[in-house]
Image (cartoon, rainbow, N blue to C red; front, side, top):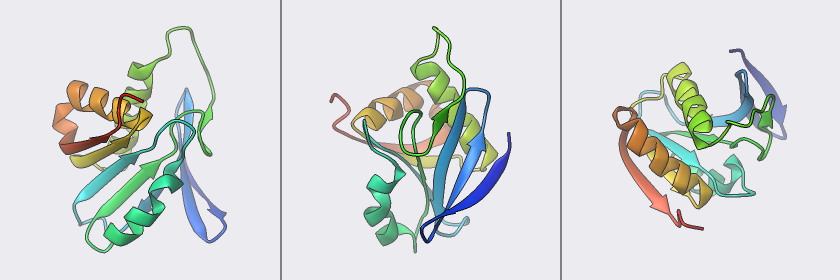
Length: 136
């Protein structure tokens, strides 16, 4: 795992490298504030939450990630067994690497479905969760 940084416009975007994925993510707010993790929907990116995060970042530490195959996150290696479990385990590894647990979890659409999976399989990592349109 290697964490690097590059500039995208005026934003600093971080990368988290794993065997399967190269995650792109953005952190806002102070690390000592309550933590909120955002998962976007199909064809979205971390930027889908930018407006709401900018409202919250004075009271919360917010993490938004590009899910595999979306935004700037790259899929480095695939296998026939890849699925929601591998994505979930990779996101848990990212959260642990960033010392971002326990956190509140917000998922929209496809991200809501993934958030539900995370909450069911890794409940100790989350304080609460909000799902918006997880069936779409």
